[in-house]
Length: 71
Image (cartoon, rainbow, N blue to C red):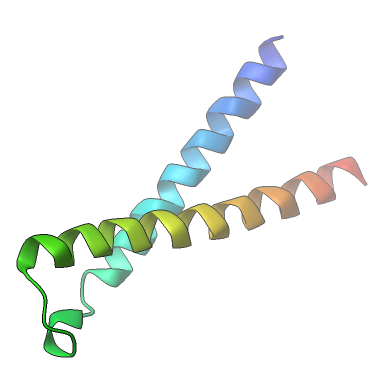
């Protein structure tokens, strides 16, 4: 039971770390120069892209860790 809680917490921490890393990385890309959009639309786009990229990269990282631990 306790191991499951620790794994869940680590999974959440890794996902949030990668989402934050993706957000930090995407902040310097100024898409509004290339596509006309309102500033609120741009902010929501950056947040959604950060969640998508961070979730995929975090899931990959967790998958790699699980494979190395279980084999």
